[in-house]
Length: 462
Image (cartoon, rainbow, N blue to C red; front, top):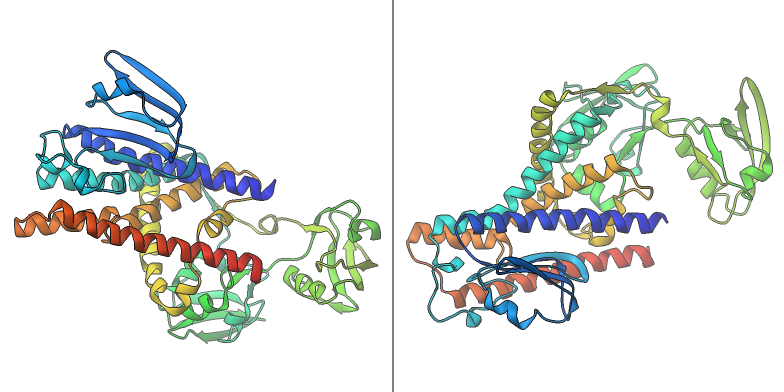
């Protein structure tokens, strides 16, 4: 059910984003009286699940058909709306535009007034930018809604009472597990996201930590971001440290058979005292198919029990949600307050992503690219509406930014051609645009194959 829910979340989110993106193109096309031949959610090679078109005064429908009904061709001024069967995107086929649905040699010899190519450059520019604009605006609207309905709740990073847990990569530059963050280049970060962004992207030089009551400085090397990417640590380089308090024991697993219960707090393993959940996680992995002695508190009573660790390095006990062990900061907004808060969140997310994008062009960043598997993994295995909408808004920001990159076949490629035309007063030929789009589309397919290939390698060979 977990992976299936992630797949459902991914498809639902991308479908919404693609629909909104193509709707942006459609709206501006219709504003400037440009015909739209087809508007499809999902691709439809071979056949469509559903087709709909206004013919005269009535809407006509066609289900599971391989082609549009012949009489629909008598109404070229209206759009055919449809749902394809391949859930990998969608398209808006604008009449007179050379794109993935129409080649240059398929256009009529003489441009017609209702065609995209007949419109002034500034109108064509707005038609193209409409998709990106709608994705960004929809992300802002989602963030406004999230602020109004849920508000914000987070753990202030400087208030982490158990300190932080650092990966090996972070420990190599001087951090130690249990360090409490005091300041970053003299400033106090509010969230763990602020802290991570400062170190990975903003190029801070020094972090001051509280280590067992004393203040220490950790100098941050310039290539720390690349080091973290090269390490392959998907969860970043640090997390909040927290105790191993059992929330649930699974039936027929070692923890249940040994008598461990919800609420038990682990304090020792094989006679050695440990506090952090991460310590137990790492040590149990080293004792697969072995017995270990666990010391724990049940209420005020210190107890111990021998548990067999299974072949996966687990005992079948779920840890209590770490957030419940901290005092979180909650910020609530009324509807009016949520508007500027949502706008700020949208621009902040865009700014952070743009800064992160430079890491893609490093050797370490190229090896960490991911395809649909990577994107799907960020969705929760149990449906969570707040997480879903947060992920959808975030992906909307990414889609808007990626589409504006000036690569032929992307919106940014069309914008580049139009801007050049507006400057030089000379329009590129439809044949040239078609060839450029073919090259751009080939590059995008190769990148897609590369990114998804990395997902396959990570899934089966690592």
